[in-house]
Structure formats: structure tokens, C-alpha cells
Image 1 (cartoon, rainbow, N blue to C red):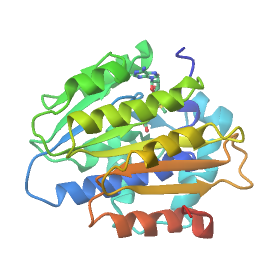
Image 2 (image 1 turned 45 degrees about the horizontal axis):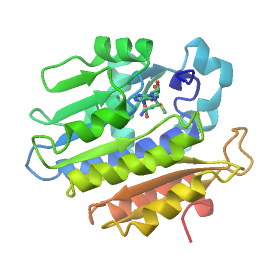
Image 3 (image 1 turned 60 degrees about the vertical axis):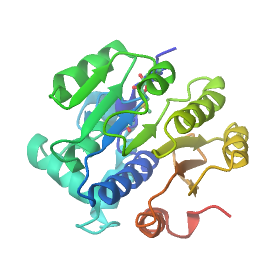
Image 4 (image 1 turned 135 degrees about the horizontal axis):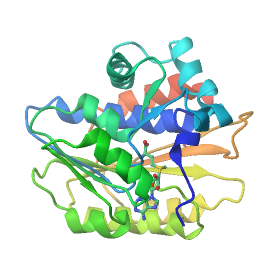
Length: 264
Ligand SMILES: C[S@@+](CC[C@H](N)C(=O)[O-])C[C@H]1O[C@@H](n2cnc3c(N)ncnc32)[C@H](O)[C@@H]1O
């Protein structure tokens, strides 16, 4: 089923939660003068326009990126703010970078990207907007493609797993995907986003991942109390979290969500 389109949700609070963490991890990894690989199993179209009909229909970005920038929740030098400003300098003030555009804004020449996307229109947009010598775009099922592409060259790197969770089975599928990438590429930094819903479907996913005793785990669950979204919260699970990134991830989450963030 491919009915989900991220354009309706781009720039909402959970999206920024994920993108801000992604930007912090990319900044930590690019601080070292060694090339890296960046891979995504569920890339979306890469770049969004918040003035487009889909984004205006839900208005979700208003309580997300719009409100966060207006109240300067993150400082100008925060890698997410830097990425958003770089993208807006090129594409205009209503542009919002999806994860591929965040990565492109922060990666360096010589770093490589592998982006997987199954939806024909989203894939076509990704092809149009992101084609470049060091960017490999695959119209491929990320659950099959990602394990097949790892470990990549260069071997240092970061993976984002960000399914649309349209079906209940995608929770278990996301956990299995993370574990299979970790088995084949134990050094990879892996960031997984998951929604926290009333039905508690994320519980089994989190229990599976925590029971796997993965290295350097950082987990963050932010409640979305009072939000108009269907979600109760936004979750992130990171493996091999760089030690330089962890304090910044914590302060980032606190800045976005205040006392509501964190996992007990
Ligand atoms: C949540 S969106 C991705 C958003 C993107 N990572 C971002 O942050 O900008 C999930 C995407 O996964 C795509 N998708 C769904 N199932 C897929 C699969 N099995 N393999 C690859 N892409 C898939 C959807 O078409 C959708 O564009």
C-alpha cells in the first residue's frame, strides 16, 4: 500500500524532531575529515513546498517548523537551522527540506548518498531534484534494498529508517530492518523514527530493539499532548550514537518539546 504522501505532513513537529536529530548526527559525523555514506530506506521526495495544496490542506507545519523558527527554538548555528536556511536560500522561504535535502545540505563533496523510494511520483521527484554523481537513487523496496546495499563504500556512515507505518506490520518490519542492517554493518549509525499511537503499536518494536542489546543506544520519545495530530508522540531510536552528538540530541529535544521530551 502506497497511499501515504509525506507532503501532507512535511514540517510538522514529529518531522522536525526527526530532522533535527538527523542534522545533529550528520554534523557529528562530518566533523571528522573522512568520507561517509548516507543511506535511506524510505526517502520521500526530498524537498517540500509548504505553500503547496497538500501542506496547506493539513496546515501541520504551522505548529512545527513555522512555530519553531518563529520562537527560535533552536539556535542559528544548530545544524537543522543551518540546513533549513541553506535550502531556503536556494528554493525560497516556503521550502522545507525532507531528510534527503537535510543530508545534501550538510554532506561534503566525496560523501555518498543512497536513497530508496518506492512510490512512483515521489521517486520521480527525487530523481529530478537530487540526481548527482555521488547520489544513488533507487526505486526499490527499502526493506530489501537497504540490507542489500550495506556495508557500503565508504564504510563510515549513517542510515535513516523512516517508514510511513501505514500498516500494523510495518512496526515489526522497521525493527527487523534495523537489526539486519546492524548485523551486516555493525559500525553504522542508524536512526529510526516511529510514531507513538493510542493503540500502542510501537511498544513491541521498542521492546524488540531494547532486548537486542545494541551499542550506544539513544532513545527519545516526545509527547504531543494537545497537538491536532493523530499521534500521541514521536519516537527516535539511534544505534551507535556518536558520543559528541548525544548531549546535543538531548538539548535539541528539550528545546523542541520542553519538559515533555525524554524516555524514563
Ligand atoms: C515518512 S515518508 C519519508 C519521509 C522522509 N524520510 C523525510 O523525512 O523527508 C515514507 C516514504 O516511504 C515510501 N515508502 C513506503 N513503503 C516503502 C518501501 N517498502 N520502500 C521504499 N519506500 C517506501 C513512501 O512512499 C513515503 O514516501
